[in-house]
Amino acid sequence: MARNWVRFRELTLPDILVSVPLHFRRENERGYNQAEILARAISKETGIPVLSSLIRVRETQAQWKLDKKSRQKNIAGAFKVARPGDVFGRRIVLIDDVCTTGFSLEACAEALKDRGAVDVCAYAFAREI
Image (tube, rainbow, N blue to C red):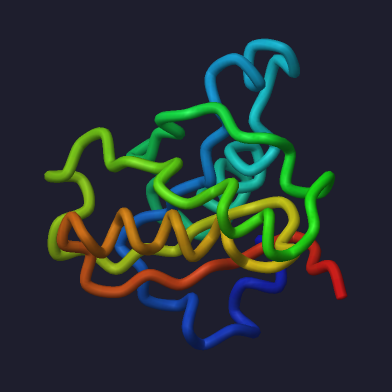
């Protein structure tokens, strides 16, 4: 992902990277957040800082287990900006491991824009087609 960063013009001007958060219980079970690992690797290569500005405020079912309609309902309102000052007036690239329907990324972007982010785009490792 870091090596291909320059191929995507919309990714060239962010102020910060923000990974899609896991609920703390799921992260504790796993021991890591794969989106955070990707964001840190991209940051190391590009010099763009990673801020953990988003939190998942409620536990949701795993999106891959649900149909498209259920996914949107499942994820609605699940994210909150922990520190609004981190995102206000900033251009942000959301980092995720897999994009299926895009509902998680849209919910994250909505939370960030509601707190004053100027621009939010996303970069995912894989896309389900």
